[in-house]
Amino acid sequence: MKKLVIFDLDGTLLNTIEDLGEAANYALERAGFPTHAIASYPYFVGNGVTKLLQRVLPEDARTDENVDNLRKYFMEYYDTHNTDNTKPYPGIESLLAELQESGVNVAVASNKYDSAVKKLINHYFPNIKWSAMEGQKEGVPVKPDPSIVFEILTKAPTTKAEVLYVGDSGVDMETARRACVTSCGVTWGFRPITELISNHAENIVNQPAEILELVKK
Image (cartoon, rainbow, N blue to C red; front, side, top):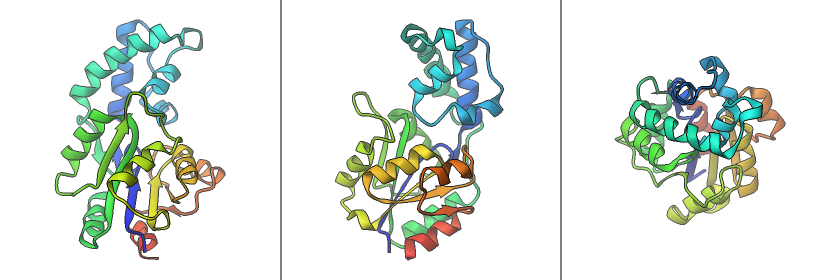
């Protein structure tokens, strides 16, 4: 049985894509660049804000100066509007409650900047006792570097064999592999199942309730 489940945030616990897209489009518009359809954003997100802003810029405009300028506008908008359209995926709230009732620890490991991670988790899941909530911090490499998982394990000491890492992308599956913990890919998130398979997901689930079955194995 697993004793700790580490969740990715965007595309795993919460559907954040519309608010992320609106914030990035606001930044692009303020900086004088063309915007993108919200439907394009699942392919832009997943590697932190810097990478998102690089990807949404025209190829010939991806300079550090432009990214820094966009970041200012992005944060200005997202910090105020990050709960406008975001919502938990169906079944997530009951899954977290059941894990907690079963004595299984839960944590979050996200490439979203740390203050936004904590705000969203506390807003949407106020009744869950989290062992750790870790977002992107200055000087700490983003996933798939496993540092964020190791940081969680210092706060919730657990043998790696008793850890399940859950995410919706190839980045998440690679993070789990590098951390030497069991991976579980979810199909309701931002990336296609083919990405999970090609990145060697050890388990793939279509519904949150299926995670309970993996935890009990």
